[in-house]
Image (tube, one colour):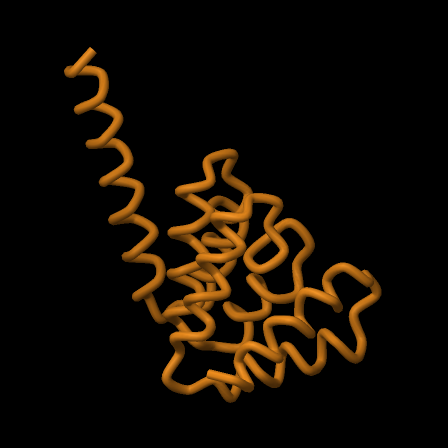
Amino acid sequence: MTALMNKNNKHLKNVSNIIEGLGNHKDPESIQLLEEIGTNSSLDVIREMTSRALIKKNEHDALAVVITNKGKGINDLSTMVAMSTINELLGLKDKTEALKILTDTVEMHSDEEVRDNARSVKALMALS
C-alpha cells in the first residue's frame, strides 16, 4: 500500500512540475496545452494546479480560460477548484487584466451562471 502511495505521489509531483513549467513558459501554446489537458482533467488537484499556473501568467488569454469558460476556473463544479481560483485571482498584484475580463464577461457572456460568477469575483476584487 505504501509503495502504491509513493508511486502516486511521484506521478503527481511529475505532473505538478509539468504544469509549473508550462505556467512559466512564454510560448502562447503553453496556455492552450494547459487549457486542453489541465483544465479538462478529471482530478480536482490537477485542475486546481492548472488554474494557478494560468493565473500566474497574468495574460489575457490565460486569465480568460479561468474566468470565461463554463466548468473551468471560477466556474468549476468543484468548490475546491473554484475557491482556489478565486483566491489566486484576489492575490494578483496587478489585477488590471483580470478586472477587464471580468467586466467583459459580466457584460457580454451568453451564460447567466458565468456572468453571475464573474460579477461576484469582480465585487470581491474591488474589495481586496
